[in-house]
Image (cartoon, rainbow, N blue to C red; front, side, top):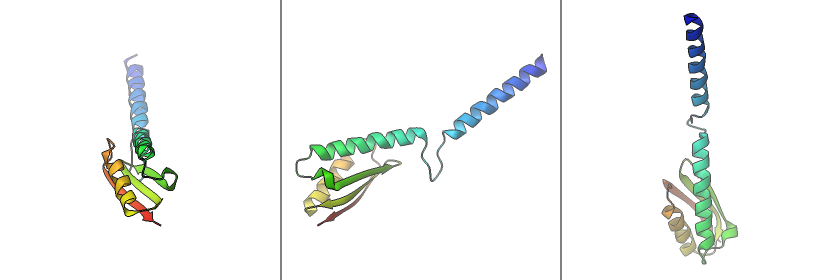
Length: 104
């Protein structure tokens, strides 16, 4: 009975370790939690841009990876580039902003 109990405990431990390793992130992939956090950040940045009257929202794309927000697309002025960067930086959880917006 003791031997069976040890084997069951070992299998449970191996199962738990496997489950936790499956949710861990690597250098090139996000964990499930990081993906969800990045989705929330992206949504908050898009909402902030939508609320800003001076920005044309349909021309600005927002992507987030591990807390780093990338803005891309086209805007009408340098002030719009600056404003979009400011809006993104104000969002909680943003570690950095890569502002790749282009003035057309």
